[in-house]
Length: 315
Ligand code: NAP
Ligand code: 8YV
Image (cartoon, rainbow, N blue to C red; front, side):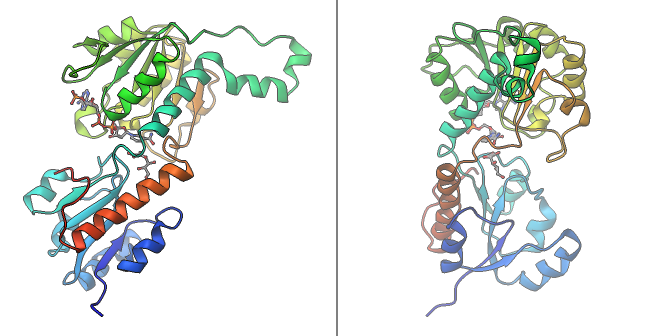
């Protein structure tokens, strides 16, 4: 029987996806940073594949340390940690896990919209700590239905969020670098105009240098004291200190956040605020979706090992 191809694993795969990997590959677990030069040197003549995460910072050093590298198979649709031009220049393919997570991420975005505008997390706490008895009714909240949702990045997930928002009779506008074909929603070519127009701004662009601090103090000012921000994209897309300042001064009404600038560390100032709802980067984190993502990571590796076309190549 032919030897199994070698793969470096950048982290555990969910559910039984790791078993599927081990069945077909000899798996080498990525060690802590300090041990990596020796680890890569020992494997440089045989490793062609990485089972990876798009958040692992992966530049030319790693690629050059593994000269036989053919594929970086990332878990997650976002791959902002990977230097894709450097990979392309070395004829290394990069794959991700698009589409299989659209529904879950959209569900989470809507969950955050509902939670921050209707204050359901606060309502739960209100009952538990006895405020209902002690103080009477919880203060009134803000309706979601028939409000205006601004979507920053109307891609695969953005369109899925829009579909759900239509179920709440919301009006939808969007911003991106391009007008999207075949959508009935209003396109804004200036992000500040979208922020000023909408009641809730939902951010779902890729991360990375191009979108860094796209949501800055000016955009938050345009969103205004009655506007809400929901970020399910990447922490880097929002200027976090500017967001904290705006929330503290009630210059925006509130924020629902699944992603942060320095995960898993969330600034204490943000945690202390009661006009935010926080989640630990769980938008795609269901058994069903994580299994589909893990399977896609393994399927891309199997395709590469068998010389077949990759399923979800990004370069
Ligand atoms: P996608 O289909 O590629 O959509 C991305 C959208 O962002 C496109 O509409 C694109 O439109 C827009 N965009 C790209 N660069 C932009 C820029 N510089 N300025 C403004 N708009 C820009 O990607 P997707 O599958 O929907 O995923 C989007 C992102 O969501 C991922 O990359 C990931 O970072 C994040 N995500 C987060 C979670 C989570 O757990 N919280 C889960 C999944 C995904 P134009 O090209 O027209 O600009
Ligand atoms: C994952 C994500 O939580 O797909 C993405 O881009 O951010 C999430 O689905 C993440 O990739 C897991 O590490």
